[in-house]
Every structure is written in structure tokens, then in C-alpha cells.
Length: 99
Ligand SMILES: [Zn+2]
Image (cartoon, rainbow, N blue to C red; front, side, top):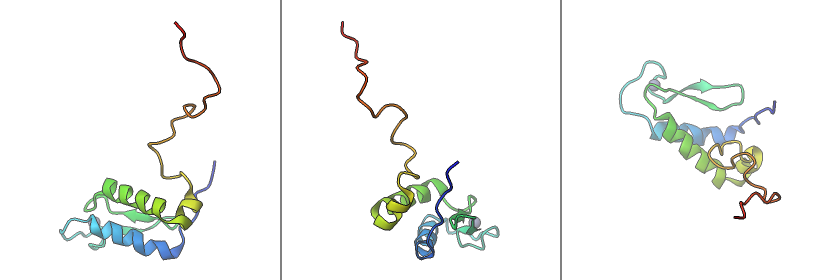
């Protein structure tokens, strides 16, 4: 298994910002209304699923990674789940049906 690179601390502030931006205005005991509960072993933000739109934050985060050369270099396509389906990229085999 590949290991996930550790997130550099300077980008953690941006992650917190994104989480706060997608947080509902309600008070939350789980995350103390911060939008996140802490960080995991890779220094990634652990979002509060109760009051944060996790999908929206994830989407914003992937965009941020893409737009930040240092991060896109570090993570490559780690966050690109949607793209690159397996085995669809090479044109080596001619599998077209010649009727
Ligand atoms: Zn919360």
C-alpha cells in the first residue's frame, strides 16, 4: 500500500478555512463549532460530519490541491477519484469492432 504524504502545516490553515466556509451556523458540541474535530495521522483535517458539508469541503479541497503546485506535486492524482478509470487510458490495443 502506498502511504499518504503528510500535509504540510502551512496548508492546514486553508483546510480549516474551507471547513469553516461550509459549516452551518448552528452551534455544535462535537467540534466546538469549528467545523473539524482535529487532524488525522497524515495531518489532514478531520471534518465534523454533523455540521459541515463534507462533500463540498472535499470538492473545494481537491480544487485547492490542484491549484497549488506544491500540493499537486505532493499528492499527484491522489484526490482525483473521478478521473482516470483503469485501463481506459492506453490506445495500444485496437479493440474497435471493424464491421
Ligand atoms: Zn460540528
